Image (cartoon, rainbow, N blue to C red):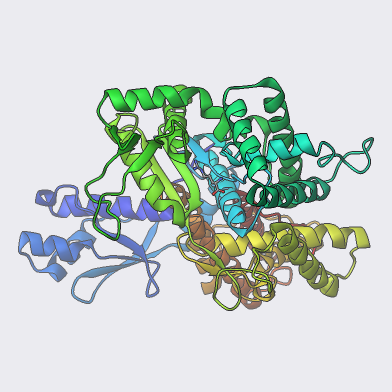
Length: 587
Ligand code: ARG
């Protein structure tokens, strides 16, 4: 494992050295290096520096250029405009750095030296309830963040904070006691499908809700059942466990369809913190962070007020003694910080819960559970909209079932794969169809900044052109096909060759992979990785149309171009894998 400094960082370093040689009084000023269209890089830092030192920026820039010793990385530095530097690197430097990347299994991407432990709270559906598109976002974005952070060397603990507790279980359990066969499977010997488990739960949920609303006596029995559940009555708990188990069968079937690896020990739902709730309240009350108000235990905030101007508190314990969502989340913070030793807590949760998290985090800060060493962040995501730009609903106005959407995506993708397929068997078409369809859904979710709402538009998602995963997957498969056709010609870096403009553009972009990963990880912004990969595939497409690979002029050039193809493919593969998207070898 060898991390490879990017060309950008090497150039930055040389410039910084030149700067301090020319202007010792400038200290360690930042040359502010950027990629540029006019040359390979542009440095804008001298302008501000000249202002600060009251000098002439063009003169300063010339002095800096003169103090950079001749070297084989920087080919040309030109002072331009009011005092920018335009920098061109040598072709050899590009190919040599790429060769060093290619020699490393991690493509030269450095590990984060300041890595810590992040607990990621994601993919948190609710027991006895159907999953919808909102749960899709949390699962997809969260899984990508798990992979990206782990790749940078972070220790990641996954937590699926499923909704498995609450007063509605009194109603459900009581109904099941009175209708004991409602959760039975059609074929008791066989393994039950997620579909069947969910449809039983759904039917039971609706029937018990209807009875609860219509029948006062049932309501009373259901409420007594909540008390039994909270008191830990064994029979009641065993029935509650059945709901959880049946739901998990369903959750796992959806996660499997999503090609996501969810592990049982990581499912720690709301009920997992029951034993901590009393103590959480006691600590908050004793420290004065929370106060009793009209019988309830509350935390108040200066800046959080209702429409009438009165303060809106976070309710940690209700006046009837019950605990809600906030008490659980506060207890989970204690667990994650004190037992799991987290240095960062990341919550991949709908933006509509932002006020809740704002209050929970602030409370935890006052209690000292969060501080300068341990931070909490909500990676808040926007709403999934229908093609009409309104929240995604069926024609009947119901929330769309996630499985239906996924199935439709797979169908559409299979049609696309079939149309383009040349030598694929039916079995391969089905397998690729699933990889392309699920990839399309994930990519659409990951390629816009999470905070924004996005339109769920399957036609666009499985389109072969444009910013889609299918486009990326075809680029990857096309490269693999070239590598197969190359026969005896093997990819090999040839730094002595002159590069065509599209080769340089591709090479310089490949060089930026490590920086993109670092930025994506620190900003919790998977869309930056997606944008990088799309740009990579686009630059590859241009390279491919301008530079013949197997029919290049000389055998050495064939090898060097194969080398660029191969490194592009490996970078695409690695990047897509971090986003949870497959890259089939043939499409
Ligand atoms: N189960 C919740 C929902 O479906 C999401 C849980 C988010 N995580 C948390 N720690 N509160 O809305």
